[in-house]
Length: 307
Image (cartoon, rainbow, N blue to C red; front, side, top):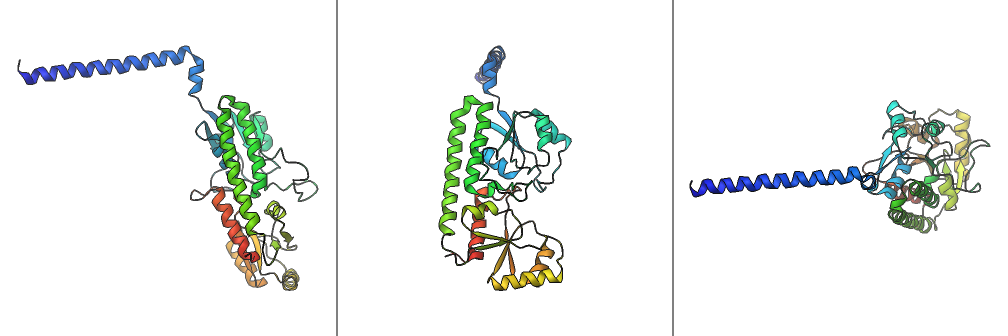
């Protein structure tokens, strides 16, 4: 046997030995996990379902790599009118924790409670004087628009994680504190940059930004007689134009779900510009909650002529 053939045989033997060693090691590891459920559990992440984008974003930040987070509402769907699909119901059933906004924002809240008893309502630790009423029977659900109230949402979300996965308590708490620090920074930016505005009259078409206006002492004025995406009567247009002129209002604010043609038509009739603000209820892959809130701040400053 020549030297070359002997080398090949030796390499083959070594390779086979390595393969058997790896197989044996994997078998031992698998046996240990099978015989020790606690070891197996360490490899399992909890599954968490969230209702729509801001709740999903806050939950993801807290979960980090210790939980799998699934968002129920599809990217381009309206979370307030969305209806559960069969797949959504399956996801809710299989989740260890379900996190909703609450305040009747999700149409399917009661359905979710029937499907899964491990429900966390992110709004449930707000006091009565913090929640703004739209009517006697309807609360304003847009609490995430206020960085201060968003902090309270994160505290409630953290409670849900600690109930379901206490072994990762320190990890979740650290992530929550980091998130709250970012929200504190955002709150500070809003306070500082809205402190010196030429005009504090925050004229709006709906109640979506009421919490933000209240938090930063903006004088929110709802334009009555103007229904979004409906053509107003001529007398309504005249009344609003007179009001705008009397109050020296230069801009109107509205959420970015406006129909484009309706917006242009109203701008033309009222002879005023509408500034669109992001209500942050849908996922935008290119931006997150914080960048979108800062875009809103930039647009509010422009409309209120802040220094």
